[in-house]
Length: 210
Length: 210
DNA sequence: CTGAAAATAGACCGAAAGGTTTAAGACAAT
DNA sequence: ATTGTCTTAAACCTTTCGGTCTATTTTCAG
Image (cartoon, rainbow over all chains, first blue to last red; front, side):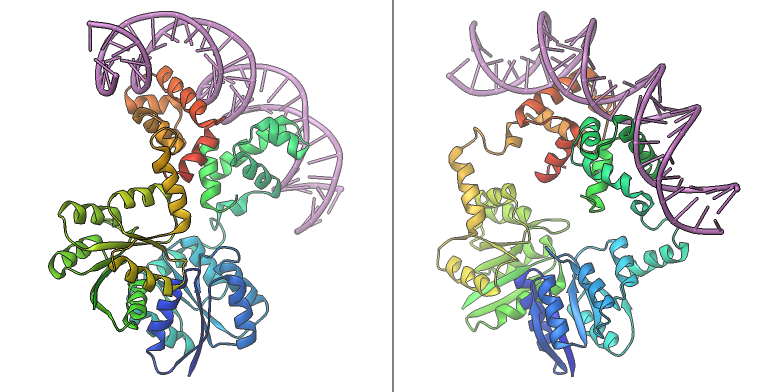
C-alpha cells in the first residue's frame, strides 16, 4: 500500500484528485489538505509515503512546505502538482528535493504512474521543465536568479520603488539620502538590465519580491 | 437524470471533477472537454442540460463559449467554474446568461448543489461576486469600475505605460505626439486618483488591463 | 443644430528620475 | 595587510515626467 497525503488549495480540485487516486486499489489516502500548514501537520503526524503538493497556495505555499519537510528530514517523498510551469520554481523545487513534478494539464493516469515510480525510488520530472531546469543546473550558479545578485539594501529599495514610492520617500523610510537611493537604483538597473521603475515594478511582482 | 458536459483545460482537474460528479446517481456525464472548441461541439451534438465550464482556458475561453451558446440559442444552462474571482469577468458572464458561478475554492458538494439548483431553473451565484457585481449593475455606468471611466484612447495609453514604455515610445506606437500622451496620462491620474506610473502599473495589473 | 466629451497638440515650467564620476567608511575574506 | 563588496554620499548633468494653460478638430447625443 502506498500511503498518500494530498494538498491543493481548491477543495474541488482536491476532492477530484482524491477520487481519481481512490480508484487505485494500492493507494491509501490518509488525508487531504487545503493549505500548506495542514499539509505539514498531516505529513508530520501521518508519515505518508508520498505527498502530492500544489505549488501555489495561499499562506504557506508548496515550496515552503517542501523546505520544511527537507529541513526536518521527514522521510516523505514529494510530488509537486502545478498548473503552469515556472522554470525558477521547478528548479528550486528540485533543489529542495522534490522527486516528481507533474502538470495539471497532463492526463490523470500519468499522475498515478508518477506516484508509483516516485514511491519505488525513482524520479518523475516533466520533460519540458527538466530540459530547461537542467540547463540552469549545468550553467551552475552564474545566472540562477538575478534577484539573488541584489544586495539586501538593494532589495529594500526595489520593494519600495516597486510599490510606487518616490526616491525621496524611499530615502526617508530608509534613513539615507536621496543620492544613495539613486545610486542603488542605478546599480539595480544595471544588474537586472532594466530601464525604468515600471519595469522594475513588473520584475519585482514577477519574482514575488513584493 | 441531469445530463452534464464538463470543460476544463487541466485533464487532472477535469477527471477529478468527473469522479466527484459520477458519485451522484442522478448525474449523467455525457462528455469531458479540455478546450473551448470541444466544449462547443459537445454541447451542440449532445445537448446536455448543464455545462460546467472553466472560465480560463487557452484558445476559446469560457466567455467565448458562453457567448456562442447564447447566440445560437442552445438550451444548455451554464455553470462557470473559476479559480479566482474577477468582478469584470463575473459580471460579463452573468450578462452572457451564465446561471451559476462557483469557485474552485468552494467545497465540492456545493458544486453538486449548484448544478441541481441551476437545472431546476434557479440561479447560483457566488455571494462575494454577486454582491459586487450587483452593485455595479445598480450603480449602472456612472462609477462602475474606475477603469470604465477611462476612454478607449486612455486605456491604450494605460496599457502601454503599465508595461514600462516611455511617453515617447507610446506616442510613436499610437501615432500621436508626446504632448498628447502626457495629457492623457494627466487625465488618467486624475480619474484614478493616482500619483505616478508605477502606481498606474499596479492598478492596471490588478484590474487585468494588461 | 448645438453643446459636451474626446482626442489632438503646442508651449512652458518645475520636479523627479536616470546617468556618471568620485570618494570614503565598514566589514568580510584571503 | 590587502582586496573586494556594500553602503553611504556629493556634485553635475540630461532626460523624462507631471502640471497647467490654451486651442483646434472630431464625434455623438439631445
